[in-house]
Image (tube, rainbow, N blue to C red):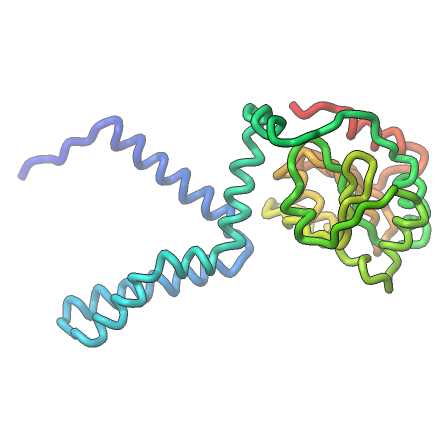
Length: 256
């Protein structure tokens, strides 16, 4: 019995498959997808067994289920696939010039005064808030998840949006080119290991900042603490006197 030749390409193939499986695992970690995969594998193994036992009727039924499996997977895993593809596309920093060709992005200073004023007031009153500053990366997928607006930012407007009983308080506000473009937006929650003390707002802020270059401000509803999130890193419990300076620095820094 001769040995099957093993070449460098075979090793590379195995490594790439392992990387792909790891990336897919990270994409579906924390969701119900792994349990669904177990169910799919179980059906497939059952189909193989009934085929070996020549059970024609059952084999035909399971075969039909498997034949439409690709379409079913696309439907079932649509959120995970969307997040996976967004992560790949938005992480390609070297191709940012392509995005700029299709957007009319105007560069200019950001007026943070209304946000700073609103956040300080909400911090004292322990009103939860989640405010996203768009920078270079496209946030259309976030904007589309919420209610589209076109308003000039003001402290009173932001406080009204995040007022506990207001219809738009649940979710994030997106600010682009010194305009509030959307409210009640849903952000992707991070799949990274973060302290259990982090609430949903902090996890969502980290999740978006991992995928894009956006700067996110979080006001904790439990403690009133203000945090700034950028590049997957969070600066918590910011002193009121330093908040404005730190926010301006975060927005002015270019992405590495």
